[in-house]
Length: 234
Image (cartoon, rainbow, N blue to C red; front, side, top):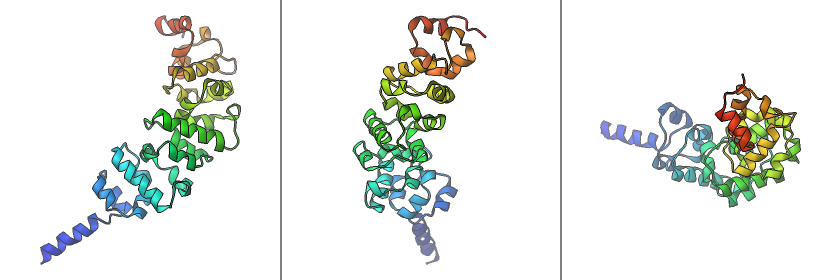
C-alpha cells in the first residue's frame, strides 16, 4: 500500500508541476508534460520555457494555451508577449493583425532571430509601422534599432534609407549581424558610407569593417574587393 501511495503521489506531482519545480528539474518539458501542466504555471515559467528553441508542436501548444487563457490573441498582455521568446514562431502571420506592438520591450522580443518566415516578419513589420509610438524610420534611435533587429529585414529599401546615419552607426554592430534580403542590406550599406556614419569606405580600417559586418558585402563591388581581398589599412 505504501509503495502504491508513493507511486500515486509522484504521478500527481508530475502532473501538477510548479514553475519552481520546472526550473529545478533542469530539463525541458515534453509536450505531454506541458499538456498536464496548469496554464498558471506555464505563464509563471514562460521566460524559462521559451529560453531555448523547442519543437513546433510544443510552441504551438503553449501559444494556443495562452490565447485560450486570455480569451483571444488581442487580449494577451504585453508582459506575456515580451517573454515569449521561442514560443514566438507559433504565432501565425494572420494573428499579428490582432496584436499591438507599441512597447519597445515587446518589440525587442519579436526582433530576435527565431527563424520566422517572411510572412511572419512582414506581419510584424506592419504592426510596428502602425503601432510603434508614432515613430517614422527617421525617428528611430539606437535603442529602437537594437530592439527591431530582424524586423528591419521586412522593411523596404526606402524605409531603411530614411534611418538617420548616426542612429545606424550606433546600432551597426547588431545590424551587421543581420542577413536580410539584398535590397535591405544595400540600403544599410548606403547609410554606412554617410559622413554621419562611417564615411567613405577607402578610409575604413579593419575595426570598422568588422563592425559593419555583413552590410559591407553590399557596397559596390570595387569597394568590396578592396575591403575583403586586399590588405586592410590599420
